Length: 122
Image (cartoon, rainbow, N blue to C red; front, side, top):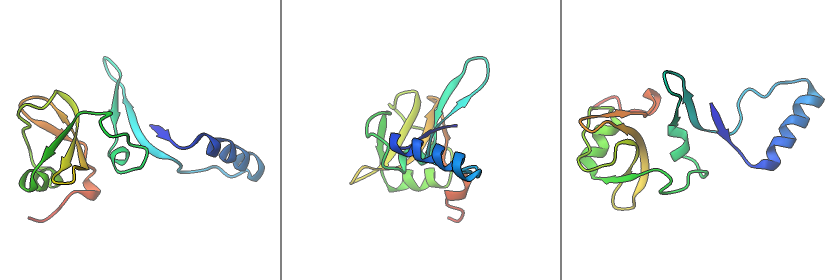
């Protein structure tokens, strides 16, 4: 898991662990995960687009309407016609707020939305 936090925080965390003997269990914002396999792939995490460390347009973005947004939030299968292949951030119009990240495979998309934040009822 790759995490991001300000540089000055790193020294403070190391000093805390050294002086207190306690281990920090959770820190920073999860921005990506390295997926092992035939070739290693860096998969962006949902928490990245929900945090202030996310830089707009660092990943391709596609603006969608309400119906598509609700389908994505339910983790229903969606197809993004004309969107680039690979990881795509979905934004909701009219303010273009990032709300979901998917891996566009062309004929379908795999949602990276955690089950814990997905809509459960229709």
